[in-house]
Image (cartoon, rainbow, N blue to C red):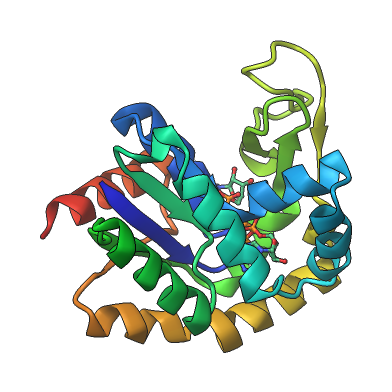
Length: 217
Ligand code: AP5
């Protein structure tokens, strides 16, 4: 299964990717996570990308395409993959199409996460990520009175807020999504690959919608 998760920041792409990885045994390939790993490791790519990410803008297409090409060549991607947050521009979508054509492995579906901006902003303001394992949580859905902690890494309170989740940066990211990424909706609809789901629903409901969309060929 080769799929793309398309949607605005905070729409739940990463959360649902992590659930599908467990269910289908295919890797999540998140360009945001790949970039954050470069930043954490202090690579030259990471140093250049950090300022762009912190400003809520997009990293250049050539860098992203090179990173994705290398990741798709890894053995675990041979059985399929979930592309989370990529492509994000028409140039990236064209580049992906050419790459998959070369590999003889076309996309099966593009899942569009539909959700309104007020809910996106609420979710992003509450998002916390485990510094150790990368799992994503939300303080709005944590039990009241309990300090949020990573359920995977026991009781270590290692949850942090992403630097690009500040109010001003989120506004910029949403504007960039509308301008540069929204055109991909028509791009993939025109190619018969688009499946839309309602992402403003409980986790299990969204997962069921994703699974149903993947079955609808
Ligand atoms: P990236 O890391 O890809 O961020 P994003 O696309 O902006 O998406 P988010 O991670 O913010 O949201 P999400 O949809 O994954 O939501 P999540 O599941 O976490 O990119 C970061 C930056 O890197 C970009 O701004 C750019 O600079 C750069 N970049 C990355 N890819 C690039 C590319 N291809 N080209 C150029 N630049 C690139 O959920 C959000 C919160 O909601 C969580 O707390 C979660 O627990 C909660 N939640 C999820 N689902 C539900 C639900 N059903 N109900 C209640 N809460 C929920």
